[in-house]
Image (cartoon, rainbow, N blue to C red):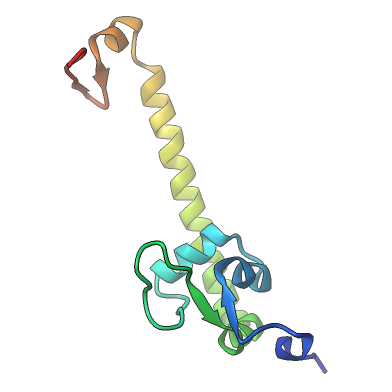
Amino acid sequence: MRRSILENGIPARLTTEETAKCLGFSPVAVDHLVNEGLLRELGGHPPRGVQRMFSAAYIEELWADQQWLAKATRSVRKYFADRNASYKAQRAAASTLTDGDREAGFRNGRVEKVGQ
């Protein structure tokens, strides 16, 4: 029989970092899961600069739910794959610029005013 995380001295409210550790994701992935609606924080979405908090009991339920873990894992994999593809595309676009383009201020498909 598995022990409850609550029996292990875990507080009732968890930060993003503690939640990430409990679920086996990175803090960035936890933020993504909240944004995708796959993870709920306590008290709704906090104002900018305020720490997100999660219920330990809720996190324990998700930790034990194999279907939720599979869905969350697929979502996080897709998020990072899309993000990495975007970074690669940006680097590829930047590498195609000539020195003359860079001197002229040509970036992201448009000419920017240089020196102003």
